Image (cartoon, rainbow over all chains, first blue to last red):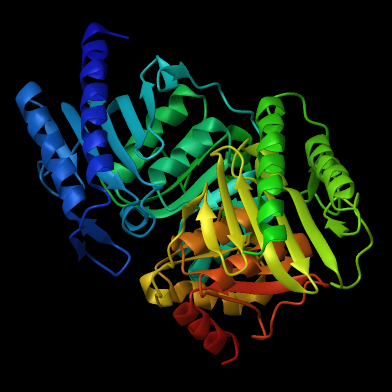
Length: 260
Length: 260
């Protein structure tokens, strides 16, 4: 780990814990909930506060960097040149609003398009997962081991909701049938952690935004796992995308099934 | 709460905590895993030990009662006469084996066919949910409030895996589309708790066994929620069954959609 990454890692962990404490303290208070593109695409005053708080801290400490945040308080980022921070203040806002748990604060840093630091913080369980380039994955500072390389029929599979309900994704449902069973948490960040822990063999999701996907890429890389688009190409962060995070064996099977 | 139920409640809570501690202590040790009817229908030495332990304690303390347990160490129960205990030593065995979390110990008592006590213990989070006839629902002794009566399009829906992947359940997938999103934990007990907490508006599941369903019926009853078969009839515990646990508004919508 280079010095600047090590120092930044320490700073970010402090920020996340500071902000996490505010979320925990305030989460049972009155929430202002607004609809964005649809009834299941929500934003709350808390999402906005968290992103503004992060943007302000980044602008103060790392003024030359650019920021791409879900709620739009960062910059208009059209490419991955320089140092880019991707922020998802509350990943799983629907869970945050309806379940009061099962949501994550996410942050990823890319240098010239290369992922160097990723954080997924499960706020209510107080578990901070971090991936550092060439430094592996940790949970609250403890190393996360490389998960078993299992086939679909030896493991569980996660997807997002629309895959399971829309007819145009029948092919993906066929993939689900090959697995031991489906699991669905409703937060891309928490599903990413499930793959990293080996609790599921793959996460298949459609129409994810850059901030949903950005942290997972480094998590997969550091654990020797796969992160690709449906066409098996590296993930393009500059568009809404369909992705697969998986252990290698399950990933190969999924690719064969998608393209058969 | 009558005296005999109050005394039995105290006894059962002690048993569950005693056994839960053993599960937590032993769960990272070597597990003997056997397949039952299919690759995703497993039993471990831990399931068997928990059931044997419960059966032994019930036989000693309540020798006249009959026991229906998932792993077959109880009695051959063909009707609900007298006092019947239904046991699921580890509900979500697949999660227990593959995720090391997201499983529950479940126990329900029926007197002459009427549910009087139900327990769902989330072992790894140490949350013991209990429902007592005319005594409401508690989590670790704290009252659980009646959840908001929401429609499908105001809430999340849980199902089991096979509904989402098998073509014959296309109708249920249509119901899922009306909700804000799907969630899938993979344990009937934990899904029951999600309904009771108001984290989801309904749980729809097919081919559940008596011990999967038995505790949920009293949880729903005590919270003014609905527990029925797909045909809207009361749940027959003497067969494998398709069930809906839901808040009243979502239940009515599901019934209309199933029968349209």
